[in-house]
Length: 197
Length: 418
Ligand SMILES: Nc1ncnc2c1ncn2[C@@H]1O[C@H](COP(=O)(O)OP(=O)(O)OP(=O)(O)O)[C@@H](O)[C@H]1O
Ligand SMILES: [Mg+2]
Image 1 (cartoon, each protein chain N blue to C red):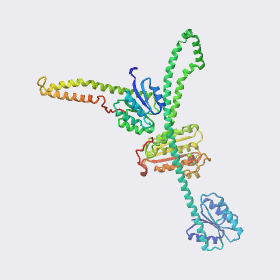
Image 2: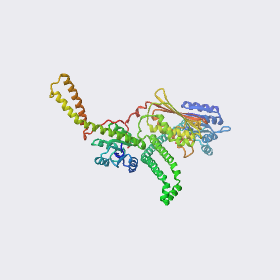
Image 3: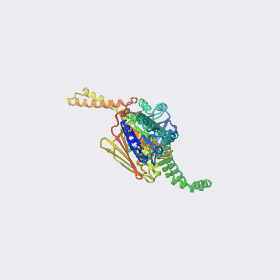
């Protein structure tokens, strides 16, 4: 990825020392935003196009998994990562199983591993965005193609033999299928992805 | 009740024995004080009835010896005498006699007086039993408190230390990365030192002087090691915290499947310092085990108590062996063996008693093994010991793969502590 387009990421932890430290580690590779609470994090998400959100599990008021569940309900497409101490592992496993989390890291984390995970997650984000863009771009030509095939079927360009009719049906179904997927990823309609853990 | 009957007169002895046996007592007789004393030393008699006047060891002397002999239970001592002088009675009581029978014997009086003795012995036995139960309850209480506080401490520690470890480790990584980059820049500047000396001689002299003063070259070459060592130290702290947390397993006060080999390893890690201090050898023969349903925190406590005793019993460079294997009949066996001081045969039956210790005051509470015993019993298992003084001691723990019904599965979805 080019130096100039660092991914904007959001780090959430109630301990300022942790935020300070993570910002120092990540500032060279990412555009780092930080929040000291779940509420603050949601506020930042509204104002900035965040690609990745990474939160501590154990926080007063709103826990990490609670925050990520809320994020999942917004239009944000940000990849969700949690880091946690040992004792919270059960809540985190539940969250993973409900598809709310892309990855979890244990605290204390290994700095190199953390960077790798974040890069990988951002790549995942890029792929996801590229896929959606492609599908969106396909929509217009697909609709044009659909109109044409429909015209063919209705005999607007001359009578079709039965073989041609059947072929038209087939192509129609295929295009309809693709269109359905393109519509599904229209921005605003959040789709629940299945992420590998 | 078992009665030791001493009289040098055969006829009196026979009459008394007949009476006693008719009343349901088990009677052992002796013809003189010396024979009685010998018999008393090898057998337990709650009641002793002795003639006063006998050659060599008389009744008073016999009772004096009995009183001086440390025995767990009380001995009810009766003197049989023709004497009735006040001074004589006082001498007898001072020696430790509980009662007197006067000759010639009246059968009815004899019966009643022996009954009194019997009643006192029974009272004393109930008292001992109650006392033992009380001590057991007390030790159970101390055990749970000990466990709870250890667990709480460990969890508190783990939580408190985890965040600082996290950011210090991270800061170190940042420092290393940025410091190395900064040094690279510095090196580039230094390559222009000659040019600088021409243009800015004073500045060049100052930087040169400062660099010499701090020995910049040394610093540069040692910096990587400095970082490595610091990082290794942090990793050790992290491992210690992990171990403590594994050890306490706070979230698991109920039965859950656990890897006992891993539990042994964790406990050994906890004792790492102790083992190293004594340069102990550790032989580890652990066979693969199926998961064992247990309260992991408590089982760890058992391993710790036994291992700690083993370390304490061993000289420097002693050896501790750990074995584990699957037994037929859905059981696993853990063996912990040391080549330390061993346990004296007369101590062997007491080592699981609460408060039994051979360690100096302040060093042992004598609770380690009684706690271990209680926990293993609670798990439906067994704990055995073999020992040879001077050679070493072996503890053998067996745990069933199916735990006792009552305690199983009350809470298999135990809440993790927040
Ligand atoms: N491995 C061993 N080798 C030799 N003696 C042992 C061994 N294990 C136990 N003992 C004997 O058993 C006694 C009781 O052990 P236990 O662990 O119950 O109490 P303790 O070690 O004396 O005190 P605490 O464990 O409360 O600090 C010890 O004092 C010791 O005499
Ligand atoms: Mg002990």
